[in-house]
Amino acid sequence: MSDAIRVLRDAPLQLRNTFGVAATAPLLAEVRDAAALPDLLAHPGFAGQAPLVLGGGSNLLFAADPQMPLVALTGQDVRIVRDEGDVAIVRADAGVQWHGFVMHMLGQGLAGLENLALIPGTVGAAPIQNIGAYGVEVREFVHAVEAYEPATGRTHRLDAASCAFAYRDSVFKHQPDRYIVTAVEFALPRTPSLKLDYAGIGDEIAAMGIASPTPLDVAQAVIAIRRRKLPDPAVLGNAGSFFKNPIVPVALAEALHAQHPTMPVFRGNDADTRKLSAAWFIDACGWKGHRDGDAGVAPSHALVLVNHANASGTQLLDLARRIADSVHTRFGVPIEPEPRIIGAHW
Ligand code: EPU
Image 1 (cartoon, rainbow, N blue to C red):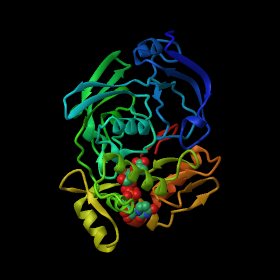
Image 2 (cartoon, protein in one colour):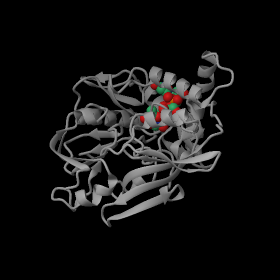
Image 3 (cartoon, protein in one colour):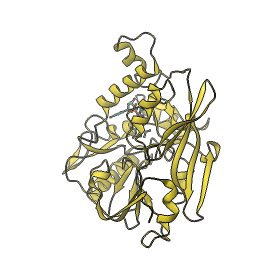
Image 4 (cartoon, protein in one colour):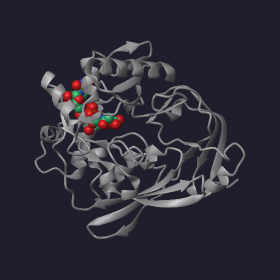
């Protein structure tokens, strides 16, 4: 096998998922160069099975040991592939850590990703769920996604339109086993156009005493807000928001808002829909800070499930189901998990 590949048997996964849930992978391959994927996927144990691609493990819940082989892409190449003056096209390997990439780009004078600072995970995972925070989604800066298709052995370069991005959604989420994202190209502007209006960013910058913020100042404000609101997975196991914000028809949003005037309502995917706040629903049902053994809800944010020490994936999933049931019973709104669940169905 190519020396770009390292295969581990019975690999412990507890340190490879940010929930810190114990699980074991029968086979896990670390792949330094995506060009070695065809070689790897021809080998016994990998051939004929769709592998699970492990990024930063920040959007996964292991409810059981995975039965499929795992692949972790570890390539770290980042480079400007085309410079158009005001916009640079930057290509980064899937295995690059997201936050380090954002800060590196800002250091090069390339803007756009500042509101997405401190999101855990890798570059390769970013387009899969179209990561978003503080009024920005990564799709706004994705130029193309390189992906390997194990079933056909073909390498694809999908432009942004072919990725079918939507709120926490893309073609890669719809067909989770079809592609292995191997690299992402971003189109990043040199002249920033800052988004300061969402969720206290402007207030945070004012409190920092900054009158004319740079993209780096915005990243620092985002980092400060996230550190306050969201538990650090290195300290308290979690996968960020466990539930997606529900997108509902305008009529339902208006009816609920009439009954609950404090309920936040955001714009949806189009004129006929609105996005509601899963955190607000969960909070209203009294779950914030709740704890069942080691499975709990973060005291600082109702959307974040936490592993206090040794919760199993099944215990976290059970808590998540009870939360979703209570929200559905009280408000009539289904909420769905954001992370990929391995070994169980939602
Ligand atoms: N709220 C509550 N209780 C809480 C927390 C929030 O009632 O415990 C209500 C508040 O009214 C608040 C509203 O929910 O105004 C929205 O809260 P927040 O600004 O924290 O945003 P969110 O909708 O809960 C989303 C993303 C986060 C992202 C933030 C900031 C999703 C599923 N989550 O959370 O992303 O950081 O916006 O933009 O869209 C993640 O995906 O892992 C993640 C952390």
